[in-house]
Structure formats: structure tokens, C-alpha cells
Amino acid sequence: MEATQINKLVQSQRHFFLTGTTLDVNVRIDALKKLYSAIKKHENEIFDALYKDLGKSQFESYMCEVGLTLSEISYMIKHIRTFSRETNVPTPLAQFHSRSFKKPSPRGVVLIMSPWNYPVLLTLEPLIDALAAGNTAVVKPSAYAPATSRVMQEIIEECFSDEYVAVVTGGRAENQALLNQRFDKIFFTGGKTVGREVLRHAAEYLTPVTLELGGKSPCIVDSTAKIPLAARRIVFGKYLNCGQTCVAPDYILCDKAIRDQLTDAIKSEIRRQFGKHPLENPNYGKIINRKHFQRLQGLIDSSKVVIGGQSDAKILRIAPTVMKNVTWEDAVMGEEIFGPILPILTYESLDDAIQTVESHPHPLALYFFSEDKAAQKKVLD
Image (cartoon, rainbow, N blue to C red):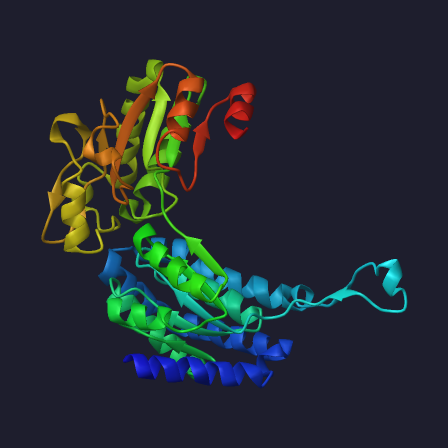
């Protein structure tokens, strides 16, 4: 779509919003119900698209994408009247003759830029909330997940007119054209490089922005942790969607005394959850494209691999991989991994672990496995 078309689209949505149509809560509920029905109708098409783009099994697609999306719609339909209700607040004495109240109001025209790793959930969930709040929306799905983007576009166009909700597909040119428009709210999920551009353009008009970016999220495991349970949860969280999850554990930081025990437990869990030959497991996902596949291969140091490391370039799969004896000088620690590679580092004391986390790239999340209440409090503080 060309820049002039995008400009006309945004203007048509602004005119539609100013008619006040979306202020009616019943209109919002009807919109959400339409979206719910369309998702159910196209459920199998969504599953097929997610398999083409990311190799996701039907079970994983429902658990992490479709099911959560439907749940969000149901929640909003149930609570939307409460969320949009006007509430009285105390009136200052100087205005005693007046009535004071709070009334939630929509922003207006919202831009939603979604990523490729969870292309259904992270496209539709912010859209659901935007519609529930009474906004119109322009949705820009990622070009890296073309099959899913096509289904998302079909669903949205089936439910809404362009003046209410519109989909803009394409790549960098379309992203730039959209960011040159004036929106009332921008919701972006993705990498920090594009995130900076989004924030820079938004700052020109002081547009409110929600950025959901990545980070090197550590997983600290101390000597009191239940090792088998920790390993089971780490393996599930790390290798779900082939490691392409923004809140996945990026690396393990464990007590030096339990490193070998934890490593063995993680190796056992990988075999239990994915089998002896993960690359042949039909329920194991794939890397989104060749560019990311090659980037991830460059992060693997074969001399430090204790399990995994195998790959298949034809189907863009990399086996769940664990590396030990890793340091902060290794390539794998220089960036967010966003793939099925798990480095294991160690610490001498919990204070050292906390200092390590604080002195390196900020995490999006932090995981801590410990049975020691005092240690839990120290990490939380």
C-alpha cells in the first residue's frame, strides 16, 4: 500500500471515530462477538498458517495463540461495561457545587504493529483491547509470517470495514509510511531497533506508545532448587516455539556446585519432551526464516555444546541446544538469542549472580528457582 493510500485510510478512520459510533458499548461488544465467531470459523486455516510460518503444532497453536485470543475476547465482553463505567470521585471543597467523576475514554485511531513469533496472539490481543476501549485501529502484521498475515487480514476484513479496522501488509516501506502518520496511540511489539524508530516518530507528536521489546532474560538456579522440576520448566519455557519467545529464559546462571546436576537434568528433559531426534519430531517448530537460522548457527560454539547443535537448513530447524563453560565474551552472550540455544553460566554466591544480572543487558523477565525464602526476597528486592 502506498503512502497516499495509508494517509487516506488513517483520515477515514479519524472521521469515523469522530462520529461517536464506537462510544456505544453495545457496538464494541458486537464487534468483539463478530471477531470471536470469525476466529472460530477460520480456526483450521489459522493452524495451517502457523504451521507454514513457524512449524507450530495444532496443540501449541491453540495453547499459545488461538486459545489465549479467544479467552481475551470472552474476558473483555464480560467486563467491558464495568471497565467503561463512569465512577464518582470526591469533589474539592472549592467546587462543592459541582460533581466530580472519572469516565474512561478511547484514544482515537490506534496503530498496532505486531511481530512474527506469535503472529495471531500479538496481532489480535491488542486489537481486542483497542476495540473494547472504543478505538478504531490500523493493524500492521509482520511480513516475516506471510501465511498467518493473510489469514489475519481475511478475518479482519470479514468482520470490519476499513474505516473501523484496517490491515496494512508489506515491509519497511509500509512501516515507514505508517509511522509518518499521526496516530492517537501506537502499540508495537518487536525488536529494539525498530522500537527506537517507533518511539522517535511518536515523540514528534507526543503520541502515547506501548513498546514490548526483548531482552536477555536470565534464569537463576540456586543450590536449594528442586533440580528436576526446574529443568522441566526451563526446557518447556526455553524451547517453546523453538525458543522464539520474548520472555523465554535467555541463559541460565546457576550455583557452581549444581551445574553438572542441572545440566544432566536439562538433557534428560529435552529427550523426554522432544525425543532422541528432535529434528524429526513433527511437533517441534522451526526458525522463522533463513536469515535468523544463519544468525543462530553463528552463535553455537560446537566445542561447548553438551546436547543438540544439529540443524537442517532445508526445513530451518535447529535442535534444542545446551552450551556450558560459556562466558560473557562468547558470541551467544552478546545479543538476545531468540532461538533454541541455552547457555549455562555459573556463580560463586547469590550476590555475584545479582551483580552479574545488573551489570549486563537488562532482561525483559527474570526467573529464579530456589527453596530459600531469604534468597527469594533478596532477588525480588
